[in-house]
Length: 500
Image (cartoon, rainbow, N blue to C red; front, side):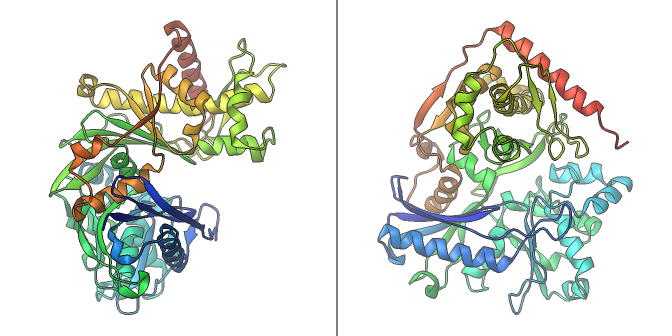
């Protein structure tokens, strides 16, 4: 049994990848599923769509690989984080659609918690800020808005889980209600210092303890899939939230190592080792992974707009037909112009956390055209990454002793122009790996570690292969001038906030 099946359940699609014992890919399958937007700022998924699409892609990938259940040593699960499902313990029926991580409906709940002075204790225990992004207030909303739900939860009839937990429960035929520490750490209900659900947090947010799953290591024997699903029972041995899984897939096991994933948005994680670092720069403190009962922590920064800036060029402005055109177009831009795009289309994420501001272009001239806009859009992703990078270095100065290299993955990393500009602005090497499927690889590794297919972390790290290293070659004067221009542009956008 030298194969591992990775389930990568994302926000817009479910994917399954079969990895061999040497971490090469044997087969993969993907299926999109519907998004529901019942009101402004609301985003929902039908839990049954998540489930059926997941089973379909698993069966497809297994068939493509030409293997059977008996050939698969383990299943690993990685998932869209914070998305919340509440279901009936007896029937398995969800009492409401899943509330997706992007959903903002609990803004009023969050505002009240802040007004009541709850943020200091919540932040101290969870490492998070109070924001609708996280799961806890979503659970409370479901209990308060589905008729009879709070009474049913009090009687122990309802279960809560993030998507990994829901899939595990379905895969095991309702036998196992569990999650891992990385997903638990994104709920506002979990104390990242004690590694336990926290009674004070549960009381503050209003979630009964009886709903909660057991929290296990990221690499552990969670249970077995029912034989009818894939032609035989398969052990489920690994779970991690998608950004933590990418950190593992990038083999960022040493303190000071950092990865950045570029999809619709961008998520950067810095491994801080066994010490949870409280951010002074509005970053999140989170659990990177938990192995053998030992928690490893990370600082995390979230950028809301990365790849979606390129989508805007394509769909909003119509100046490109395909994302791949952006780099060559940017290369043709007028070097005498300094055009800055601050892509605050949905507000600004870390380290600013201002949901009210909106995007802006600075430095436009009569000669500004498609090439300059493409240049500004790609560069905006690099500038935003620099802001996270600078915040992380300020929060954790000891990271300066580690070799400062950024490992990157995600769709935007295919752009050589963007990755070179990123290295230039960070003044640090940027490493792009051979295997770009780092999120699924992280899930597969966690499962394969428990099942004995893959070696312990330091040995696994030896398998990481560099596809290309982008080295900085911009002069210090140019770099400083460009970063100063970005700082002025961000100040201009923040100054436009009329929310207060």
